[in-house]
Length: 137
Image (cartoon, rainbow, N blue to C red):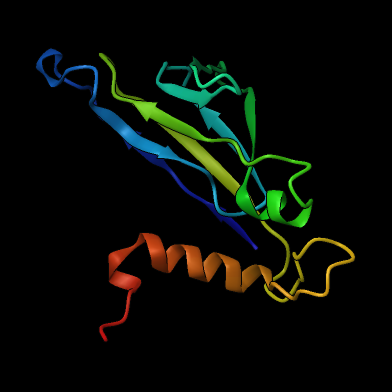
């Protein structure tokens, strides 16, 4: 399963303040993300000591990000990258390509007796995030 998305972050006015984010802190749901950007600043990753560190890549370079599914599948040996995008003085474009295994692939830790299908994990996380996917009770 793969998903290509285009993200546009408009220029933020000066009065918006330092708490105005393009997207709040989150981890990607899947395995691996390849991210292309226009080189504009804004992407930050959470470092082990809790600091936020800016990450930039020039056009033509890629940022590689690990997601929740890979952390689950590796039993925590690979950590999902907590990241955010801060609004800035210039607009920003990014194009993430999310790579995931086939829907029915078991992504439970090897040797465990669990069965966690990749598609079920993604569906659950999308429903938790996107209100329009939640069914009414």
